[in-house]
Length: 446
Image 1 (tube, rainbow, N blue to C red):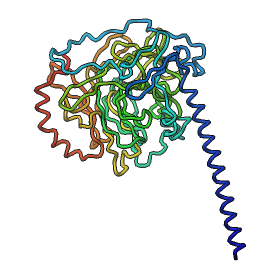
Image 2: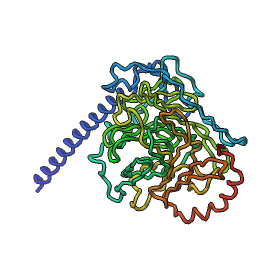
Image 3: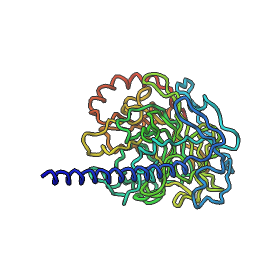
Image 4: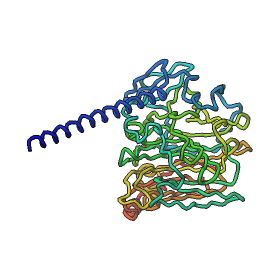
């Protein structure tokens, strides 16, 4: 009996030893993969700046940035400016302008990058270890197909038609969007003043954005370039609103990513850091702040240029694109919530979109995008001739193209709290609508 017990103990000890060896080997492999990925992502710095919010900004030689890891850009020559001057907006702004432009980032308080370098937010080991996949850090993919994981997600397309153009917009799995869309022309630019907030995010695995999309290509495998602000705890280790860009060649299935976490976007600015926090942010019934985002294609060199206010940040070169080498077929403005708990999944996420208030709350409570503009080959910056608002989950997030009177152009309001019952919010904001209509000073006259 004792001999049998001894044998069992020896067997258990052997299993524990083998298990610990296996765990240790796996741990070493993960650390090795993380170190390799960090070396790829964090390029050698000419100078490093410690921001007061905890970020480290590396000033990287402009010709050693991640863009040049892309096979199509090995011999790419950087263009510092577009070959043409894009038109400015001649619309007259209302006299009592209440919103203030946001042109600074928190790290600016701690230093600046020297000429010939660009600021890149350093990725930490902790951020990589939190990722579901080290190889796909900074993006959601890969999906095996566009309709993967569509259980409890609406997968049939929304069809929009205008001026002989038909677009099928496929709701993405695990996303809920509210937006305004325009189509029917060859767009080579879009612009909007995006109201900045710090909305609630329920889980580190979720995020929320306010942004502009320019898209082209098949509905189930479209190309898209995007910019705006994002709150993404897993990617950025906090819940601050941060400037972001994103792009994809196949509706986020296997390509594209956020900011400079994969090669493709060529940054030229030494002053603005993608992924860096922006301050201040708007307060309910208080001061409102906004960022001016512009994306315009240079028709001569076919580069899609991104501007943040008056600052040219960089461009997406045509070499990395297919359907968007010459134009975008449609443009969207609005918000996006990413969560596994949307579209029929219960309980629904409480991650907020915009300010967390519904569009009906209007100015001072709901998030907005003001002075929406498109650019076509006439090179005239103008309000879209045809627009339509839509929300994939109107009980959770809404959109409203509000126009005070015929003397004013519309402003897009969007957002919502997520899980909170819609009926309660409608009653809560009824008294706010009249007040904000009287105090409206964000609109622009034609």
